[in-house]
Length: 129
Image 1 (cartoon, rainbow, N blue to C red):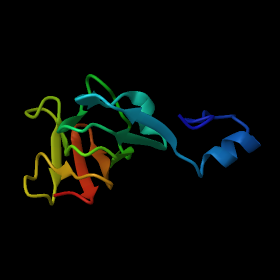
Image 2 (cartoon, rainbow, N blue to C red):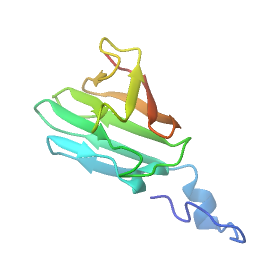
Image 3 (cartoon, rainbow, N blue to C red):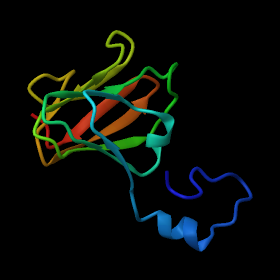
């Protein structure tokens, strides 16, 4: 997570905090499934690296309360397709312009941004199929 994020009222912006605003923290994942955590909410690049198909899951707001406006960036560096979907599809809505609106896929060396616009609503944009 970026140093000093999120900031609180009365915090003084230090050089480390300011310099951290222009850099991503890497969260490398190599497993078959990854579910986002609250630490992914602030300037984090989640890399998916698996030779087989894998899943990037977005939990319900009740499980992980990412703030509205959160953008989680996913970069697939593995050979397997990464499918982005909700942990609970009846509660969390994932929308995209991909071939399957509720479960977009990201090919190797492609990335997508998952943008939270409401309590349990996410839009996925980027290099999706």
